Amino acid sequence: MSFLDEIDRKILRALQDSPQISMVALAERVGLSHTPCWRRVKRLETSGAIQERAIILDPKVAGLGINVFANVRLKAHDEDTLEALERATLDRPEIVDCFSMSGDSDYIFRIVVPSVDEYERFLKKVLLHMPGVASVHSHFALKCIKNTTKIPI
Image (cartoon, rainbow, N blue to C red; front, side):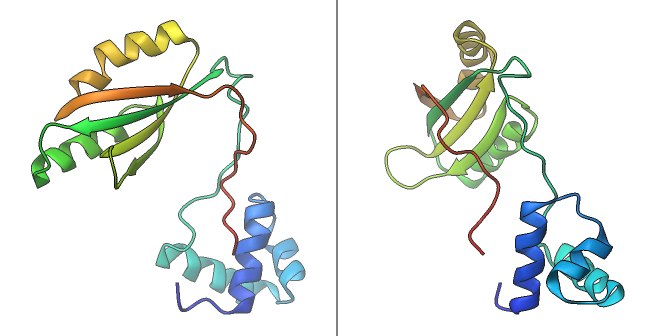
């Protein structure tokens, strides 16, 4: 976003590091008083620069130890099919990331499930029945090396 100045960037970096930081502590960290800092945060939220604040959970602790990357190809590429598939992904909590892709796949999903058996059920009962899906090629992650919501701002 072209409207970000260095103070905005400091605020965004601080919020990425500590999403639950108090406004007083945030203002102190970036060198502003409380009210101007609050106004900037509100502007960043309203503009969409801040979409939401997140806490990263360990999926294994929640019993969700399997990460699957599913490359999805569609039968058709008309606007209705694309929009229907994208809407359908929003209703599935197992699909934690969805990207429209260039290249061989139309979409890539990151799916988090408790087991390979549960993924097989999800594939057969859900993925293959999503709007316009022609094929799904699945890849299982062996180990998570890095998982972050932070962007290099």
